[in-house]
Image (cartoon, rainbow, N blue to C red):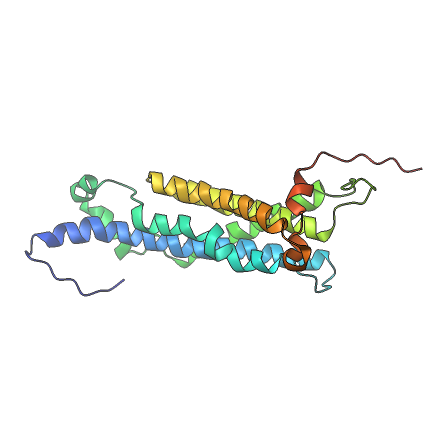
Length: 226
């Protein structure tokens, strides 16, 4: 976090260190830990899916799902946190200069903190995977009585991952602005819009995502076998 800074008067150094130094340390620390968290959550669901599919090589997620996860569906909220988040006001930073010791003592970026975020990601991924597999297990998914395939399972897991990591970001934010609300809830909305539009494209291009959104939201199927 080192940089070259020019200040017009020495008295400006107090605000630069105590206010912006404190905010910057917290923002960068949470940003990095959150990046670990959201990618561990995403990666572990892929591993569990492959184990569930007996390591057949069938991908858990559509290629575009993989490509856009860190571009559109989870990136903007963490950028907003890195720019706007404040745990306390500037007045309190100046009133209680000992808050600056968080950075000096590396309270928020220790190995314990990083591993804690990663462990949270592993736990969330396990819960998402078993929730999705249990919810789609042994129930009619189509009119002919077919159960949900691995494509439907992958889309359901991906949706849960997008929801969970963005809601985790909402819980991590100390200072909400309208921009953060737009980025967090907008990222989730963009995912649904993308899935609906992309799934409506010819299956030659949309592949495993073809009509999966419509099928997931369709009425529950009941099939009686004889």
